[in-house]
Image (cartoon, rainbow, N blue to C red; front, side, top):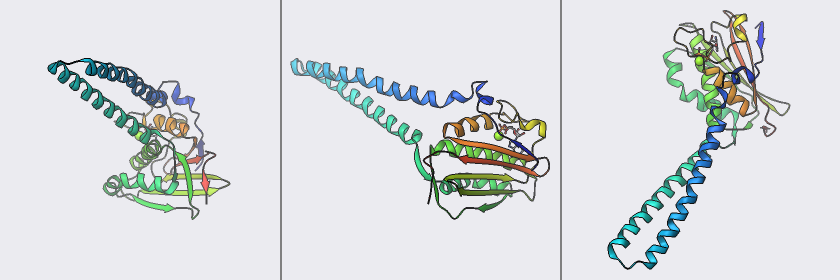
Length: 240
Ligand SMILES: Nc1ncnc2c1ncn2[C@@H]1O[C@H](COP(=O)(O)OP(=O)(O)O)[C@@H](O)[C@H]1O
Ligand SMILES: [Mg+2]
């Protein structure tokens, strides 16, 4: 493919699309923690009142406050646990991330008659990433690939390379390709060449990849196809 492009993260930050993740997570996590403090105070105060009250009705109301307090605490604990589950960095085999993404989009492949070819390295490699973020990024790239394919004969080639302590994932299609002058714009927010496109898939993808220390390069040639080359630069990446 004759044209290659290496985006910089600032391409998308200029329009403020990138900050949607990290900041929100931090905000919500600290909000959840903050709510716990006044709840603990309410509990202590209610306990004091319960011990000093002899009034039957008053005791019942205090019991209701106590139960509701516990309920809010449970909800918060549960929310915090799910946040950590969703947003935490963990080590995953690269092939597992790819397979889960492909499976999640299996219906689309079927409906678009896409042939998928996998060239997986025999070396098992693991990457330390936020799973959901990486799957979202891969899905965006794959959906674009599908959308570029011809009605018949469309192919998606997934290649993994483990080399030099680094894992590389290549997602390639034999679709319409990208005009040379458009290539530098594809990561810009709201850039789209599709009649009903939104132009946010790739800027969000770039942001997600950057926050997981994954570099991306794009090669494309009109009427030949497009290749997204992702290299997992994370120093925790492991090859066995
Ligand atoms: N695999 C691909 N083949 C051809 N063009 C692509 C490919 N991936 C991205 N593009 C180009 O990049 C543009 C931006 O993509 P994206 O940010 O996902 O927005 P959208 O899909 O809504 O247009 C697309 O409109 C298309 O022109
Ligand atoms: Mg898209």
